[in-house]
Image (cartoon, rainbow, N blue to C red):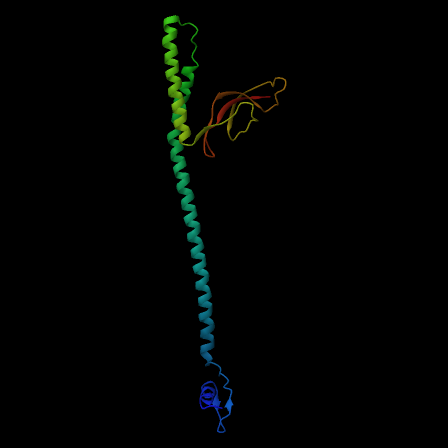
Length: 189
C-alpha cells in the first residue's frame, strides 16, 4: 500500500492504532434540528405550491385579459356598424323604388341615378365586408331564432318544409360570430 492510500482512508474513516480504517457512522442531529428541518421542508413545499398557483393565476389573467380586449374591440365595432346597416337598407329601398310612371327623359336620369346609388351601395357593402360584416343567408334556410327574427308566418306551399324561411323582410348581418342584427323573416307554417 502506498502512503497516500492510508491518508484517503483516514479522511473518510477513522484509523485505529494498527492503521485499519473504521467506518464512521453519522450521529443523529441534535433534537430540535430534526423538527426544524421538517418545518423548513414544509415551508418550502407550501412556498412552491403558492408559486405554482400564482403562476397559473397570472397565466389565466393574461388569457382573460386578451379575450376581454378582443371582445371589447368587437363590441365597439358592433356599435359603430349597426347604424350603418340602416343606411344600407335605405339604399336598397331607393333602388327598389317604382319607376313605372317616369317618361323617357326622366327614365335616363332615373337610370343614371339608379346606377349611382347601386355603386354607392356596393362600395358600402364592400366597406362593411372589409370590417368583417357578413350578411346572414336566410332565404330557404331553416328558421333559427339565434339569427332570425320571425315577423310573420304563412302557410307552407307544396314542397316547402314547415319552419323554412320563405321571405326576408330585412336582411341580418354578423360580425364574426356575433349577430349584429337578426334577419327579419317570414316563416312557413
